[in-house]
Image (cartoon, rainbow, N blue to C red):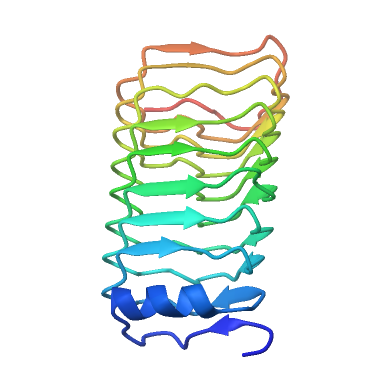
Amino acid sequence: TSKGYIWEHDWVFSASIVAQIAKKVNSFYVKFVRKCLFLKELIIPETITTIEKYAFSNCDNLIEAIIASSIQKLGSWGFSDCGSLSKVTFEEPCHLTSIENYTFIGCKSLKRVSIPSSILSIGYYAFGTCSGLKDIFIPSSVKSIGGFAFSDCVLLSNISIPSSVTSIGKCAFKGCTSLKKIEIPSSVKQIGELLFFGCSSLIEISLPFKINSNYLAIQN
């Protein structure tokens, strides 16, 4: 269309067709490319500024996504349940300010993620159930980590929380069964309940002297 790059959901495109359209499009947003079963690589052109919610969800064979620096909004569920997605690159300078709710939930092949330094917040379930995730870099720009953000990332053994973070939502690290050690910086003033619920390998936690939490953060 004249304003957007829209494919109705459940249509099936070959990877080559998707690549050709992506090179020619002159538009502002991407919406409903979900369930493109043969899409393996995604390069977002510089003409695009917005990726709408659900845009690439359930693209089961998508392996790599390169997100252009022109993107100013990446909607909730944008890449949810892309089971083969193993690499996500945010081109610099990145203009995103948040990783929205559920953006990468269920991306079980995603192993490493470097969050760009423009990000201020990580949303609810943003990386939830990314069962292959081993390493994540959180920049010092991030101020809040949402509830369940990294829940059930069972291979995540180490995570460094920068001193810019002031709040961590409930169950943010629930079920991270490989997590062994974590330090919550003194900048954090609020943590949610059951923060480390089910973290069965956790042997060392460093918490600030003063912190507000209405519920038990550590259990089981």
